[in-house]
Every structure is written in structure tokens, then in C-alpha cells.
Image (cartoon, rainbow, N blue to C red):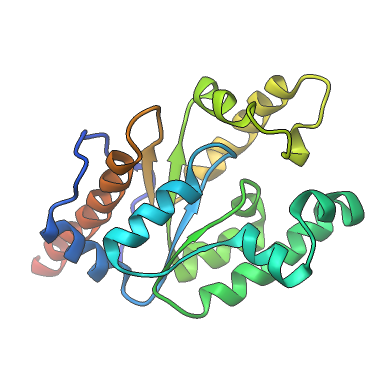
Length: 207
């Protein structure tokens, strides 16, 4: 399948047409649909809704990491540091990518890891939930459990992460705008964006 990077779809429709759901399933096949993006983008919430629409399981990689390590993400960061955490994260995602289909929500730093990103792009179908700084800050400032934001100026830290990570997130197969709108609308837009990939496949195969 030819990969198209950074497509955006923002049509406000809360329910994906059934034909688009079928096309999205066909595009995904037996792979994982992998959500990437910064903390607060809605990867888990939107991922669960998309999984429901497609009728496939949903897994949060952070929850899976906590399950296998029997530690929380903040505890892992504190005990082992970010490099060791990323290595564990890569191993967990590698295992999850071996079977599917499923929807997989990943932590904000997962796609930044060269090894993890290569595995996702080669073996999954990636969706970047892109949100602007104010949307992200409004969401993440309500919780005090983000290890990377435990700084003197957490909003500036978040802004710096946005600048560093967005060029890399843009390598994902599909981009969908996350914003303060009904989650069902964002999920439907994701399914329709996947369906558009199927339409492009059909066009290429007919030539």
C-alpha cells in the first residue's frame, strides 16, 4: 500500500457511513491502528471509539506497560529514567504489533523513538491526533500525573515538546485534527480518513 503522510480530514460528521467503516476495516486488515500524538490529544478516548466503530479490540500501551511491570508510568520514570522506560515501551509495542487487528493507543514519546516508529510504520497503520497548544494545555493541566511536565513552567515544557515532536508525528500515515468537539465526531473523521486510503488504493490498482 502506498503510504500518504499527513492527510487531514476535518469534516464535522458524528457517525461514519457504513461503507466507510467497511473500507477502513479493509485498509487495516490484520494490522494495528496505532494512535500517536502528544499527551492530551485524546489518543485513548478517540481510540476506544474507533475500535467500537470498527468492531475490534482496543489496547492502551501505557496500561499494558503498567500491567507487565506492575508499576505506574510515573513510578517507572522515577525508578529507571526515561531511556529505560522507552526501551520497555518499545518491547511492549513490538509484541502488540505482531497480532491484530486492534486499535493501539501509544504514549506521547513512543513515536519519537526511532526503533518504535520504524516498527509502527512498517507493521501498523498510524494516525496522528494533532491538537494545538491551548487545547492540550487545558486537558493536561487538570492532572498532575505527567512525568515530563513536572517542571517549573509546565506549559512552556509542553510548548517545547510540541515544537520538537510535531515534525516527527507528521510522518504518520494519517493526520486528524483533535479539538474541543464531540469525541464521536473526531472518531468518525478518523474512520473516514482511513476509508480515503482505500479509495486511493482502488485508484492505483485500476491504472
